[in-house]
Length: 375
Length: 90
Picture (cartoon, rainbow over the protein chains, first blue to last red):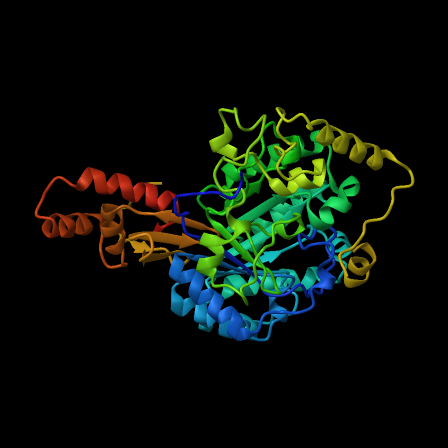
């Protein structure tokens, strides 16, 4: 049965600290849970300092401060400073909203290693529409300031049907802003993106066109800018090796202290994800049911258990299996070997029909009102 | 990209080279990434401090490890390093 493992697991390397669910933006593809408004409590500064210390001791080295919008936490500089003293490489994953030059300097002095700014589109109108907030001009300013103060500048653009046609302009914008890294993240359909999928999922032709443009650009800027291309797994034949294998590398701590093997896992039923207020990171990582549940290959059923690629993709993503087939133990339906693969084809058809429909339903924006309505 | 023999080599300002106790090895850290280094790669990169040229790095390591003939291996590694942005030359 799942959960029984004998050897000691590999230690965590990446810690994603979701400091808060509060966010001034309302992106309709947000990966936060739909019912985020129900989780009102946030860990204290002391809790976070302890979590950082414990995870670092186990071997975590890459640290993401995320959210929501992490800048809404007043204690961010203190957490950054502690992280630097412990030897983390710390990344601030931000919308840029509320980020001033003073704050950029303060965080640099505290020891922050890099700032990743998300931009929703290459034009003000579309950016501000998708973000649900007038933010485009300020984001451009922030990108300049990040460069000016010596941080590696990572620009992140989430790609979906409403902005995929802007790929050439997005690439030109990244070059103009002097991005050192450009993350082109095709939307992953969890959380808010899942409920907005009909409006966000591009057609295969759109994907292929955008990918061709991005690949050509990647060669053109080699040596100057690195491109991280997050593949659109709905158009793949095999699933992604989600989280590099469950409970092997990644540790997410949600704003209320719940420890998750991946940032979507709180939607999975019956995992009983532990809270850092009750257990140490070592206990959570090595002994909890949640973190050992999908470790290794013992949990697998067909077609995964006899598949010769099972050690390559680990059966794909359990959250996707749960969302789309109703059972998290199933193979990720992205896999063409999955008996449920038709749900992916249906989703693609449904999105294509929606794109052609004259009365397209509106996007559901990520905000507390909608969160309460939907949960 | 190749190494310019005249100019000193320095480690990238936007990467970090550090010893990881938990892994018992040196690593390079950068946005969303980590490269684990073997001992010889780490020894080469530690000498990329902006004061030494390729020839000086080679002679320093040859002296440290009482050996010779390291030029080709070190050059090959530094070419990989410069392509990956781990080191720069002004």
